[in-house]
Length: 195
Image (cartoon, rainbow, N blue to C red; front, side):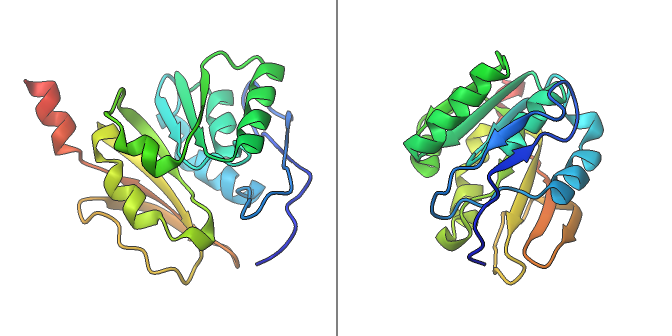
């Protein structure tokens, strides 16, 4: 799948509907397609407003900006490529997204720091050739709210071993991607909240 990325992607719905996000020609960059994004956010309709959202391998920020457009309380995007991180910042400024924060960092290194927040929704869509799904999923635990949801996007043939307590809610596939939404039960968060 070595197709060139499109020059831009559009935000599908919400307050930023129709806004365009640039798609720089960077290695491994593969924005989530319109049809997949539309399906995902139809699944999430009641789970966005006011929620804390983490876009872990942000890339173009299509998922994070879509969440911000639909009323997320806060969106944190983590992107290690400085060119992409700068493009995210420029888009956030142009679109007046005040509740959006961009971290220029390696996602796994960022997850290894002490959790400063817990997220209700996480987008886990790493570069397909990096094979980071399992490692990132395990590292997410301290960052997840008690009843968080995690969206995972991967190649259809990828052998992914996600945590056993993640419950599959919905899934779909296209020729190029398998995408799924999971519910997580974060006992660590529940214990912390109960103490």
